[in-house]
Image (cartoon, rainbow, N blue to C red; front, side):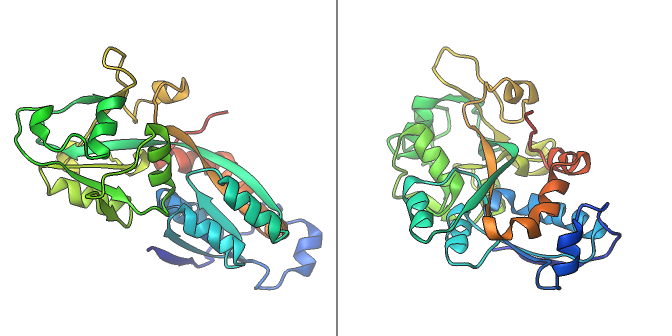
Length: 287
């Protein structure tokens, strides 16, 4: 889990805090708690650092742990913002209704889920049916797909992860019981880069330039059928045209009672500077 308190170090935030808020705010009123998606946590930390450099009256505490944890924290009054890489489930919507907790929803970026293998595995692309059979354990050895005779090791996420839920829902599968449950994207990359039989799924924003030489992993292109065109999660044109199968919006759920407090930060995310930071992290803005 990543926990970071962003310390104020800069200038006033361009007058976006309205007078009624300025007069009523205490230090507590400018303390924001943000929890949830590991896919979003590094981006959230960078956005918060840049925002508090502009408005030093804010203190923002950020932790990961998965989308489900962030949403549960909202329900329990332990967060103002839940970062989530999936929408609310019907059950969660009902839980908020029962507690009479109103939410505001912000979609601030577009993400793609990338599938990775060790850099030495001679595999370039997969269709959805084959990918599903790998992740549910039907295909157990790489020799069914490549010349490499190694048992497949799956590096996945815990069930509280929005990425876990997203992949499971898109492929309509149950993950293999043998799949390793890693705590985040960085751990999956570390696992796969030292395991020549490894395969995993991560947020594409965690894939750097030249992943084979710098991270020891290979991105797998995805095609919907065996005869379809395969697309990479870092293909900007494909993302802009919604051609990559595993792309999704990234959400921030905000407690309505906290909205006035967090609104300056949300407005910063939506500013040109915020959008530049989002893109620099490997995510996308779709107007």
